[in-house]
Length: 127
Image (cartoon, rainbow, N blue to C red):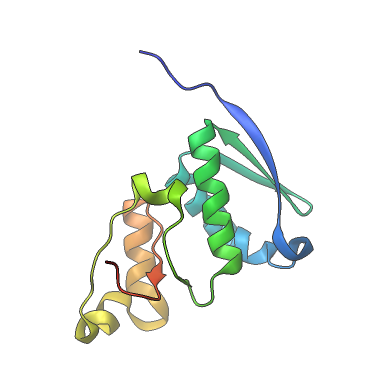
């Protein structure tokens, strides 16, 4: 079958790379999570992110990088359009949030690692 052509993008990290450590994560964990979620290859050189993949994959990775750098406590107002096609919304009842998230986010981190997903919280309820 036909495959979308691969390309590469160079994306400057925000605030002159001030949040580079957050984009990499402990032992590269966030970089790996971003790659798995966006289905691309991601590497950092200085304050630049080099992304290899199809245009759609690179757009997803760029949107995820922005979330990592701009979100406060992993919360955002809305899901970026580049992520809509791969996004599933799960409503977690208020009473169950502590159990689902776990101590220091342990349960959610384990779930993300096991499923190869990236989770975010919306600051407002979906329509």
